[in-house]
Length: 413
Length: 149
Image 1 (cartoon, each protein chain N blue to C red):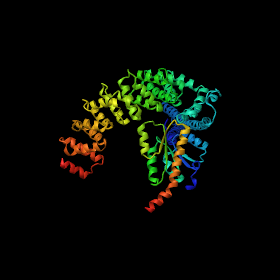
Image 2: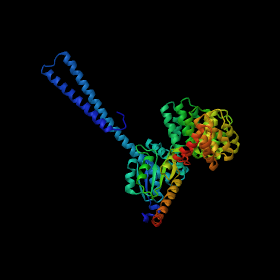
Image 3: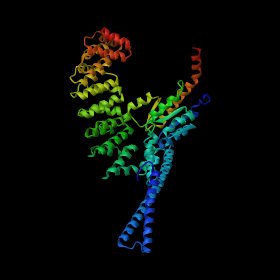
Image 4: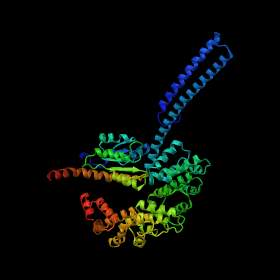
């Protein structure tokens, strides 16, 4: 009955089935009644049968009527809600785009807004920010919607709480920030998950306020103290938009940062390509945890630079006992000066891991003419067959060799 | 084509499945003096509208039911002549860097993340339209150069 598509067809089919059943049972009941008056159906058994038929027919008729009434009223209500949404959307857009200062709007009417008005303003706040967004936020505050949502955030009813968190995430109200980060300690993972996203989106719109009591620092403390999946933490850091760099910098500078969150911070820094943070990433290249060492080198590779303080740890990591660290270190080595990188990389061509050999040859080929010459040399004269084959493969992929030349090189080797 | 080289006369097509977003963009553009704006909330109509309206700029959402923004760009690409510069400005709430890279690789010329700043959107639209019109002005010269060589 409560379906999204095919409402009209479903109603017609249901009505036809119920209608047919009702008519048939009705006809049967009447024929029994007629039989009773004519003396055909006057035994107790026939009386029970007649009562059953009549009650079933009445129940079906009632159910059919309910279905029709339900669909009719819900369609009307949906249409009315859409119309209301459109009307309020137009009204809010006009208000958002006019030059009225936000403070002035907050002093307007304080009457409670209808549901459609709140839905419309929240949808708009997902699309606009800056002055236009501030005007809409002022309207929400002026009508007490922020206080209502904050009350619902503390509700014992989970659905109401989640709805309120979602709405606050759309609205990005600075006054809700502390309430949202306090939810990061909530025992339910779904609440923590939604709260961290909403808090991150809100922080993205708040003015920077450095220092241990600033919102950025409070967000970091809340992140450190919560138990959320790495993917959720990463998404929340991405949601910080232009604030992500500052928060990630502070996060990586935390001496007591847990390994999982450090890994998330390194991954996010690399994904966002925050090139000026190579120095902060370099600090994790010699971490005791191989996952973190690998994440740091992967981030440096994505940032496209290896700061001098990480040169030593990178050269060491090329001989790391863990193969995935050697892979990431080999990729990052492409951003070392070629005179340092080439001699350090060359032993990797004989590595037991296919992935390390591939990363090594690919990095060497990226190190300019000297690098390409070294790979070519390896393809022709390296004593190890696996090293020769990998070198040929990389030269082929880089377009340095064509397939015919590659066959020739293999033959020479 | 050449006579519509005033940016405010430019034909702008908005494709976004959210009606709120479409109405907002229409109002922002109207308020800034753009008079030639068409829009749709149905991505499957985007290509037909493009062919009928021949826009100078497409404002496109990425995540839409049915045909998403990537599929729309793919279909538009088949219909855009090789020497035509049709700017596509992506408006999306997706903040993942790889999505941005994929959109730019698929033919988008610029990228704005929702929630957006009105001034920023208008500046990007203006810049893209100026580039489009400069390109259109250069086309006859480029064509004659091509013939000469």
